[in-house]
Length: 227
Ligand code: 5RP
Image (tube, rainbow, N blue to C red):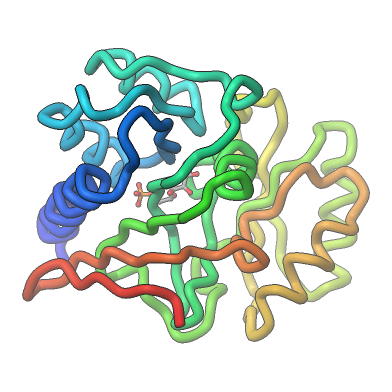
């Protein structure tokens, strides 16, 4: 798939997601909004329905700026009781709707909002669908003083960690991108990685995966719900 085709699919899925929100977000409630190029297109597609949305919780500073630019009020998660719908992209998604996320480095805030949300709507182009997660390097956010310790622990698990050079997360931390993992049991690996002291968040979204997938394909947007 060419980059232009991929952008076109992201665009169509972004419009489908705005339509989904218009139909399913209860009046007066708060929307959760993810981070990345697909999420950016989704924010753009919210313009015609922004009056229906009371406000949003953003998963990154970049998303917050984009939502503000189109006039959607921002809410601090601590001031919000419920998020009926969270819409976000993914780097990979498997048939059970487990995902790798964090290519844009916003995984921690994304995982927090996903944990609060009643429904996670994943928006992705067809290139993101895989049978087994792990071709895309798994991002892990780490406390800077623990980077070497976490890297050693990851190596012992069979992964090859690489420091994302020149990148600091919105939370002031570093990212290790881990290649070489074949993730046949994403729930188990997510739990194992959570035990490594010094990690903030790993980019496996399996314990809390997506509920709905809006997938941009060459023949249109396919909508499916986790079985
Ligand atoms: C950011 C993410 C993104 O959702 C993921 O990287 C997909 O990005 P894009 O929509 O640009 O392909 O997890 O942390």
